[in-house]
Length: 388
Image 1: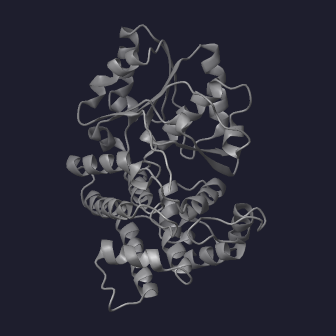
Image 2: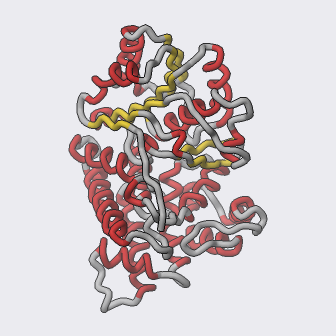
Image 3: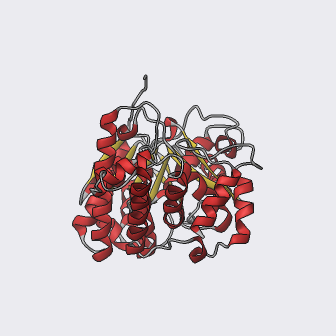
């Protein structure tokens, strides 16, 4: 087993972390800054004022866009690439969550390449360089603040790009900032956070076994913090825990280095999110229990191990299939505690939509989905039916 782990990202974490913004922008020699965000929270939290004042102090031009939306679109990225070229932008700063961060990452690579930025997301080519990107987190869950991943959408086509080139230069995480996040979006992000520890866990390929224990610990911590968040969303200590878990969770960080990630849940959700504009964490909550139930019919072992180690299930009283069902039930109950939909019909997705989802996801049954137990088109249809 040979692998490489590297990260040049600087994480500044804790109440007051934003006071480091000037130092970080100076260190990156920012002279023309594109600032991307969405909503009014950057004004309510004082982030906009901070960015404006710091930009002025360091003599940097500030160009801004507050047009980012959930399930961010490639069209805005293309517009911002053109704007960045016109203003000779040399640094991209984002505030918010994954939608803003992924937009910023895509702009960063798009400015320095002549072809369309969507080519990176279709796999036609890979980026060689990027403008430096920095982020200010206002919602924990995605892990995008330190990740090598960006997810964008063109029409109903939702795709992910993964490359170390786009890892942000720095992330500023002040847990006080997430107090403004609407509960629905935060709950969805919290659901995604817990599942982030599972994609690398569900594997039967050779991997470092101690990584299992790290992922199990992270999963347990995320579930516990999520339950506390559901009972008191205003608790700063709970949000601090969530922000920290988000920063360390991301699948390609050290917790999962050397492992083959499953990605079944994320890939299926991306197709659902692309077609129905579902919030990512909501889609995750609606399908993951059914994926576990279906896949456990032929490969229950990793689900069973997690149920024993994380949920303290008794391996002597139940077989692997029963333990996997226990895990699926526990996750479904957890998502329900967060107030999230646990059935596709609750998201407005009906049985007559399943064929189109499965057809697009498997490219007409010419490719499979996931790595732990790859799903063909018929498998996907069966999972969707279970999740109905």
